[in-house]
Image (cartoon, rainbow, N blue to C red; front, side, top):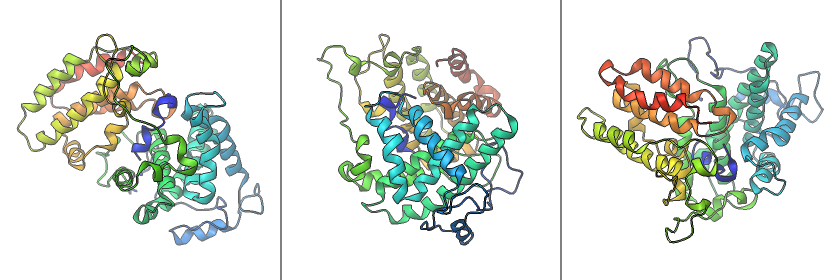
Length: 387
């Protein structure tokens, strides 16, 4: 994902079951021994053990060598993948490599989640089985701690911590993607293999409240300043510049002929009468503008709101009732999710690799035979390997 333009997309977003832990599933109980800074407060009684380093490779201050490694990797490697621009003067690169660690010094849940994402990143590039498992365990450990510390913060948001909570929710989202599907029934926003709710999903609604409560000049103040930007409607009278081009043109990936398939899908959903059909139609109507911004018209021109270029914005705006439709395995809702998988494929970010194919395969196994034809277009679209 090119964060030269998408730096503001995932911040619109923001994971214990008794069965064996699947791939990417956070552990329910952690043996906390990684060496949290002594000044850090956590919400778990067991976290008091973190004030004393317990590993041989640790400094007396409580910061372990492993954590130092993760912080260095985040600032020197992972940050570049999030910024999508290696230019030294790129404001988003400066944010991820310089500003975010400093936010983490004051709000330790941010630092924990940065550790987690860095560990997932190392594991992603590590082909050695034992080493990959080591870093994934480290990632899940820090993600679990960071999420546990962030959750109570959301209940007491103020102008001093709203920016930190906002970017922490972004990191939770990245970590959720990076962890990968937690079993064959994982639909990202819910898991059909468990009765437990997806724990990170409520953060989406928490972040939505943050956006509604705080003005941008408060939310994106200080170290969060790079996220401040103007959002404007492209003027159709202006020359044809990149500002009026769809993402596929600006980011150089294949344009799909999407208009007819989406029009036909909308007509199909609008004709349905089952419980939840109305919510499915609303969610599809919210997805269509993202298709417009992503692929544009036949000439890859897009004159709509810049907000619609953010693929993850659909997840941010997702209504709980639609998640309920997915949990009931309503075919219309599942098909809509399959069409969203196509949009996911357009994002060029390592942590979401594999999710589009997983979602489509899961949906294909759940949709009733009478509706399977609606999966032909997204299947063909993903076979084209947009990225």
